[in-house]
Length: 187
Image (tube, rainbow, N blue to C red; front, side, top):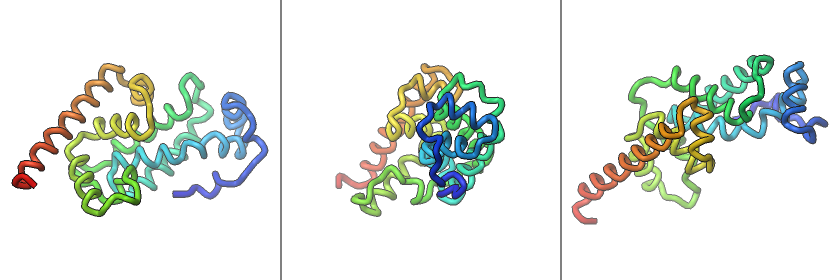
């Protein structure tokens, strides 16, 4: 996914995030690019984790960045840009996501190229047993390395809620693994 108008190099890249934010609020396109471009992969991965397919995730990520640009004048800067973008992306994806949509192979971006197709299918099946919130929390912690506090802030929930969702996700994955191993007749 590429927002071509966010890809041009500029001179504002050396400014602090606070200075970039101030310039972006005033409509400086170079500042907007420098502020949002580093967060584009995170936004895309989150959209992919929630929506489950690449095309919808690309659309949602672009909508997220466009919504952020429109909302920049109202953004106070109390939260980190990444936290704010995650909140926008999650809200947008939650509204877009049809009920019971299955994850497709593109939703497995956390799997490296060394993994086999079978491993990807197994992971897809496992992740499909999680709720959107569990998948989001798990992705932000396991893939992005965020703390429970950072996840909670970005999702507008408590740290305890995040910890509970991570616990439930792990339990659901363990139940899934147990049931899938039982189906293999000891293999």
